[in-house]
Length: 135
Image (cartoon, rainbow, N blue to C red):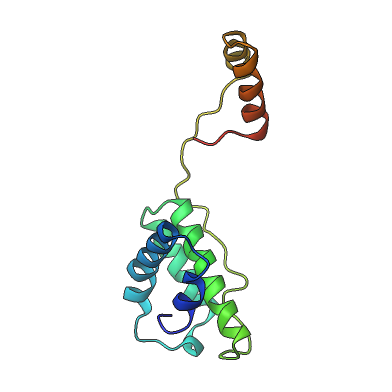
């Protein structure tokens, strides 16, 4: 991971993304699988890791990022001819991973918001609401 994957992908990541990704990889993958070779992994090994992380209370987002990381690592290994096929292709994020309890505005609340705004702010708010405003 440190010799090929990180140097390659770090070139396309912003500094903040690189720091977050490297921390996640080292914390969750390197400490778990540090001494193993790429060819020693099975789909079952990788799925078991994701299932354990989900059962341990990690968020859906964290477990899903780990799934994405594993898929990327093994896809690069296949592309570079280290492996013939990737054991990470069929990985999924377990249902027991915690989902955030997100609050969604009711139509009445949206109507109240729109009624309280002037034309310029209303246009901006309508666009943000229709496009799915992020927190």
